[in-house]
Image 1 (cartoon, one colour):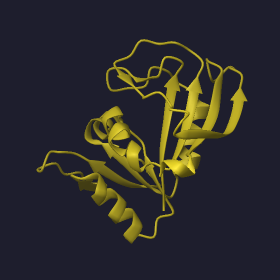
Image 2 (cartoon, one colour):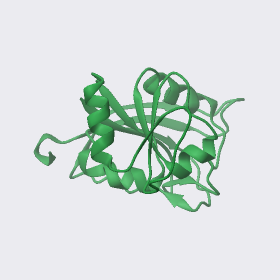
Image 3 (cartoon, one colour):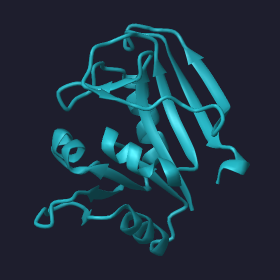
Length: 167
């Protein structure tokens, strides 16, 4: 099973502000949906609560330290290893880490692939994604897009894979 992170990031690595996205990019939302649809996704409690509900068409796993936390429309776990075990036992081919920042950082050592939307803007925010270390990650795909009536910024869909010697 492949473990992937999927994230939208500004040029200054901001991914969020006040528990939300600092932009509205419909094409990025469509890419996120296309990649994650039908798969298990892992989200932190705050990220789940900011969304307000489970994302449809996916098995939602919420990772939290709160032992009393429950949700009506997904699975709650308290250790990253449990998310991996649940997905593997279900025959999952690709498990997606969808945030927030704490969950991305926690999962980075076991991540095989990163789907990163690079939003060509600099924004203020309170949540950042780590720099992509070129000693560990290799860019395998990049598709560039120009802003349009729906998407207010230029953006790139970039895929990184962990270098073989970094497993």
